[in-house]
Length: 104
Figure 1 (cartoon, rainbow, N blue to C red):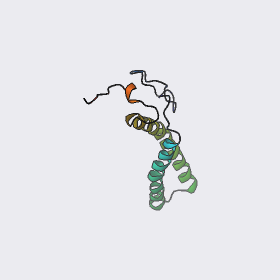
Figure 2 (cartoon, rainbow, N blue to C red):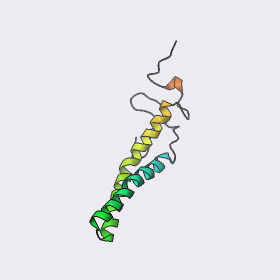
Figure 3 (cartoon, one colour):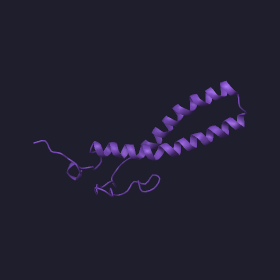
Figure 4 (cartoon, rainbow, N blue to C red):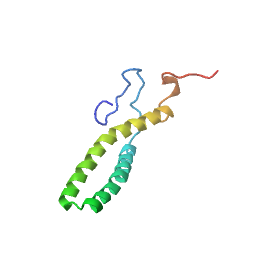
């Protein structure tokens, strides 16, 4: 990664071209899915167990959802680009892959 969500054009170690990846909206969908599955039962549990003030509950879980989303989003993007590289999808050509072993 070059920035928070920007993938480098080439790998600084092996010069593998990465500019043609197609992560698109996949990382965002995965982030929403995981954050929702973690936070929805947790908010229900906290509400039923402790009965906090509504504003406190909404504020704390909003901060938690945003923090978890910001943490997971770049990791899911890297994971999707890595899966595309491993499966030789979208221009990750086998002849340009480093560490490729040919079976002869």
